[in-house]
Image 1 (cartoon, rainbow, N blue to C red):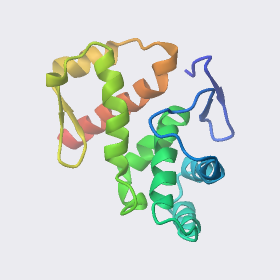
Image 2: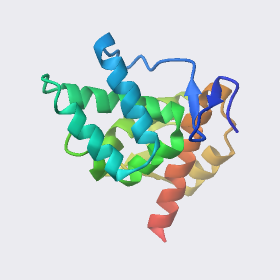
Image 3: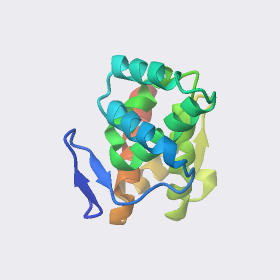
Length: 167
């Protein structure tokens, strides 16, 4: 279910009515970020390679890193399924950005703000979430505020991924 804060786009992803304030891009980067988000939502390795090739033509060497990092952060809120796909396929955006690190860095403060102690979470060397069964059960029963639904969906996907890897 998508919260009232979102509207569905053509890929079944939500379009946010807010902007991540963690990294505020320059106005020049906004078009590149919008293109990056559009291509990342399509979950296509070919589109991602085309995007990376396009971004390398910009003279600023940090441009590709900045654009991709901001696009991944926004994708978490816009289309958590695409963010999860990138989490499962991090090599597609390497070496420019570490997708898993970005997603975990965005996700953990929100989860901790829901009242869960930091000690209940372990992040592995490859940025996967490791939690106890009790914590996982409590998280899955958590009912987020509408503004937190995308984070919650991504967290549930990451916890499900952990179960598949543990079997």
